[in-house]
Image 1 (cartoon, helix red, strand yellow):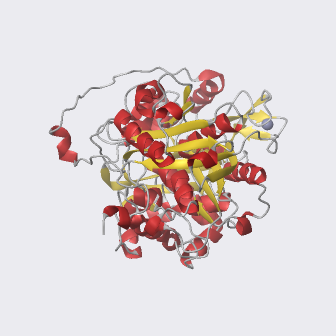
Image 2: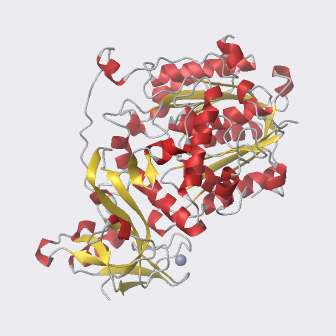
Image 3: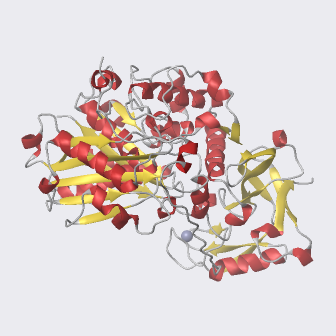
Length: 393
Length: 173
Ligand SMILES: [Zn+2]
């Protein structure tokens, strides 16, 4: 792999997102348009300035419309331009911007719009009906699985292997739902939530309880990526994408190590090498790991090599990962607090890194001075991870 | 304080949230997508399913990395070489992880929890197994590392399905 000779540095110069909600009246196209327009407005650009468009969206089954790429095209602003949809399930939120990055880093395009959209409410009665189609038809589906099962099993194995207490995991849900109070798009912000609320919430598939899970959402988000050649024409505070990585493990999930996500570590090492990061714990100031479940924030921090296996729970208990702590994690409020419209989590992962590093996060701005952040997403059949390192220079 | 002062970007994000019952009041279209499928089980899994009918668990050996792959595959995804031989396993297993589920497939709440998890088969590497149900135990008795054995359906009821195993129960000494 050549991670050194990238042709062009790539900066984020604008971001936008819709509100995240259980149901939105807007269509997928309308949501994509709203988010794309906000990102273009912040960058001071119009669609005419954009050379190419990347669309990210998760399973077609949510919409009941195949080939969602062209279904969403007009709202994403891709008409009459080089355009492609990328999709690696939940990992799409951070993978779509990686696809945008390589379009610009290659030197082919100077200004690229990345739009992610998810409308999970169309499928009736619940998004679970669509999730049923991701399991292996021969081995898994006859057992009538619910998608929560696999997370529950992974959480159980993680707790067992690294001796992690449920009470520490539940603190992640408390932190993120409180952090989300400062977010104008938030679906599940709760300034008063306590640890007891999470511990006493109704059992789903134990050890997973209702408040350990992020909700299904509708929403869209977008960012504008530009080449180093034009970045300062658009803003005084470009935020640079200095490292990208991605990696996928086998689809045979019953043959995987469910306690430590090796594929996250591989993706992180790739991104860190590209960014010239040797000691991630010292050189990274804050993180937006993918947190659809509270234990995933911990497991992903460990996969990102920002904590030893099992240590992320202790960091959480000690308050280090709070917004004003020594290593803020999910200052956006994360998927647990802002909502989880799969691919549109772009807005709470890459979007938040951009706003934090540009010093524009308002009441969500972390206390310490931050120069380097890492965002990560996770998806397909719980097997793929995408990682992006961003810096202010 | 305006909304713009109170929140950082994104400023004034748009979108109109709907309550569940509002869906009936706004213009909308309903449809079903009644697609039906018949999946061929393939070379490796067909044999695996046939052996289930016989009350046997079978894997495939990758001579290169010395793993007995269960579920079996005709190639090893790591070595990217053909697997070389069929290996019968005793069928006994160990609980790798589990869940005590109070929801069914469609997220409906259920009273009696489903005990489900993954097992690793004896004779295969750790992490090499399948997902299945557990039975003949109380939820609080289910533990990682517990030795278990399959409980088969009566032979004349087996059809070559993962459901030919009813569940795994604590292994009798
Ligand atoms: Zn092999």
